[in-house]
Length: 276
Image 1 (spheres, rainbow, N blue to C red):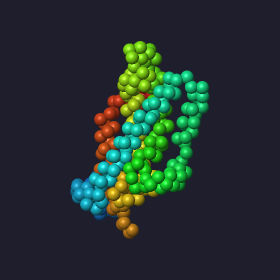
Image 2 (cartoon, rainbow, N blue to C red):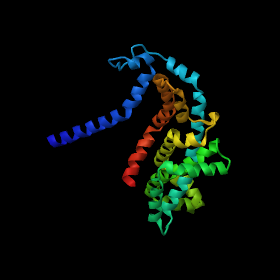
Image 3 (tube, one colour):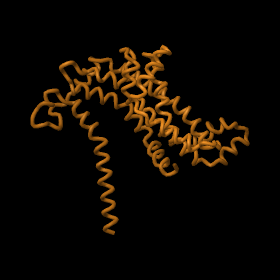
Image 4 (cartoon, rainbow, N blue to C red):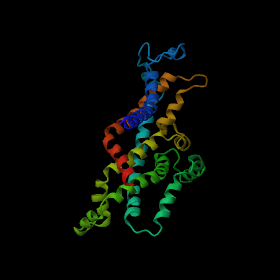
């Protein structure tokens, strides 16, 4: 009994450490965004704001076109996620259902392709987008993000598609569905937790990406939120409260998305781990 209690306490401690590690930075940024700048240099450190202020949020929108940056990020992340899921669903279905001769080799190649450092792809991508005259467009980011998100989304969906009984597809095809129709009408709806999980992963990766967004879209009108937030710092100044306010505003869409689909995402992660 004591051993079980000890193991339970260790699990609770481990869970608490993980939660603290995940939420404390965001909580600290939130507190910083509500402070006056002078409080940041006071000694001893004040953890809780002495005088709460929302002026940093007003300043964040006045100093830079923050709404425009967030709008660009929403467009790029949403479109890249949609197209990633379309392609990943078909690729995962082919791997999970078709009797491919080199199936294991294909899976190994998918895993290997996701291990290349992004910086090694920067120059080829830049030259390709310049040759296609796509620099400073949404397409310049959407296409690379689709390619970068495909491996992980495909692997997530493969494990879910394999868990769907083939009899359901066969029944649908006997009723007149094509294999393509069976995929979209039977397999994908039954794999909704996996689809949502893959979608969240693709959206967050696209939303947070900085290097390509900085390099491929240098136009002020096409900047995304991660790039735009770096512009708040000056040559001799670093306004942490204003930057923190901008970061909180940029975090809100992702936080709302995850909160809205929380049950499906958690279910997708656990089911994928059990059935993969």
